[in-house]
Structures are given as structure tokens and as C-alpha cells.
Image (cartoon, rainbow, N blue to C red; front, side, top):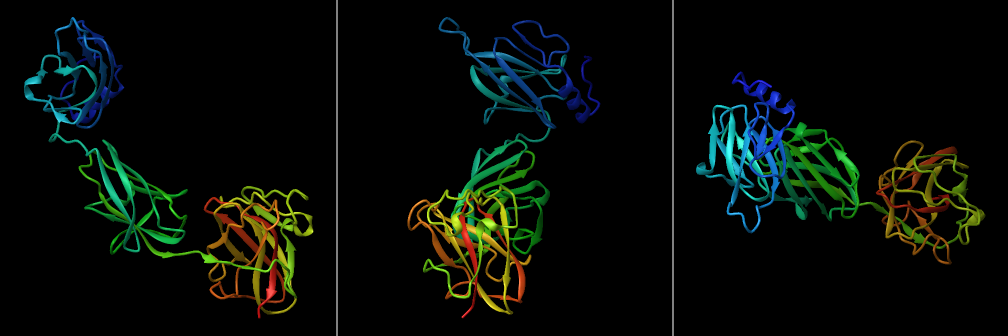
Length: 397
């Protein structure tokens, strides 16, 4: 390869990036060699727009060796202006520019290190780490620990902000391009943002668990600090609760066995008659996952009126969350419903509970239904599963 001329930084860097990396040890550096060292070791070099980043591991010469450093030569597209050894600027006395072969020459310590060799701009490294607070309705409920690379920032952590439905907002600390920002909360990733009065806002609310894991990514070359001041969950709306009632079927109830579902999506619920204790009709559905899976039933009511939704369920987890649709719409208060633990998965006495979902004190309002057939869909969210024995529609009193 001919020696790179000063025809422009971009072309020079591209040429270096595609050239084969030839490392010579203790010998004469050939014209096409990008990197050579006076002692053997492991080396890597990456060329960026303003610098070359060299990583190396070189063991010392042993007890008999007198040298405290070894010599490293690295070819650059332009004259060396500055250098970092790990996070410290390298003194000028340990740097030399060889104009004849366009090489930076350094005396470096043994061990494992990273060297930045810059030919443009001022010396700059991103910080090692920062802490970004997470707020819920103005109260700090967690933090993200940010780590920086040359091409951006990754911050991870969790926050005790849920469960519930929340708006998501990222508050910048200075200029922040929405196109460089993505935020993952639980298993939901937000990459589209709109500008609001107090930061960048997600286009829609999301569902979060009690303490969701959070991962924030911001792209940017050699960031000098976090461009995000804080992450905020706004207008936290907790899930609707259900009410445990007597384990019996109320008079006038429309009952549909859970195993008689007419459609489902996602992870298929399992039906094995006789597999669970004391099930109505001899079967139930189980492994009904909270991964977005859903189940539909058809229910026919005899006349127009207000009806309350009940279900017989079992849950061996700390609780479970569901979204409920009726005829393709989410009734008021049923966009996130929390079902409690029943102490088991329905394999022993007392592990099946009948719960009232609408119409009671503190519950979502009754369903207004016309006479005829209706479609009930229940969708599992926030990862936990829930077993169903049957569902009921009961005339509201």
C-alpha cells in the first residue's frame, strides 16, 4: 500500500480502516504496516474520525530486563497532536511524530492498556460513568448507572414506579437529538419521541411492573456528560383491583367454562381435564402467560342491562395482570387489572378463588350490555401467568 497522502481526513481514515493490519515485533516496519512494537504482545487498532484507538497487552521483559517501557509505532493519516494512555494524557516527552513514514512513536508501560492517538480537535474522552435519577410523579424512585463508549452512552437500572399505566418522559440536559435516543422499560422499547414542554415524551402510555428494569441508550460521539438529566414516569395510574367473594355461582349468572374458549393468540393455554383440583366442569386453562397472550370467549346475555364480570382463578405467583376487552373495546377501568395470589395454581383445596372484577365498591363500573352474544377477551401482560376455571356475567344489583 502506498503511503497515505494528506488528501483529506475522511479518505485517509477509510484507507486505513480497510488496510490489512500487519503487526511487526522487534523488526523493521514495512511501508504497509499500520502498527509495530518492540516487544511481542496482543494488539488491536481501530481508526475513527479524529483518532486511532489502540488496545494492547504486553508482558514485561522479566526480572533481568531493565526496560520499564516498550516502543509502539502506529501509522496515522495526519500528524499526531495528542494522546491518552487509558484516561491520562500522555506527556509530550513520551510522544514523537515520524513525518517520514507518518507514524506516531510512543514509549508505553507494560500490561493491558488502551491508547487514544488523536490528529484532530482537542483532547477529549467521555466520562467513565454517571448516575441518572428516575422519577415517578416528581418523586425519585430509582436510578440508572451510565457507562460511556466513544459512540454513545448506555445506562441501566430499575425503578419502583409501578405497577400501573404511565406516561414516559426523558428530560434532556442540553441538546438531545430524539433520533439518537431509545429507552427500554421491562420488555417495551420506546424509540419514537415527541417534544413536549418539559422534555421528550413517548407517544403513548405504557404498562410497567412494580420495579421494571430500565435501559437507556443515547448515541453521540465522545459525549462529555450524560445528555439526559432524568427519566420521568408521569400520571401513574395503578391497576384496577378485584374483590374476592364466596366461591359460588351467583343466581342468574351466565357461565362459560374457561376451557371452552373460542380463540386465542400467543402462547397457547393448556387444557388437561383432571390435572387440577376441584375444577368446575372437570377442567381449566393454565399456563395462561403474561406475555401478551390472549383468550376469547363468547357469552350470551338474556336481556339488555348492567352486568358484572366474575372469574374463578388461581395464581401461585405474587399476583398477575390482565387487560380485559368486551366486544373489541376496553371498558372503563379494565385497561389493567391486578389479580391477587391465591396461594397456588389450583392443585389443592383453597387455591381457587372466585373474584368480582366490576360493580363492587372500589371496582371498575358494571358493563352495559345488550341482549345477545358478546365476545370477552382477556390478555396477559407483565409476564406473570394466571389459571382460569370459568368466567361469569352476573346481573348487576
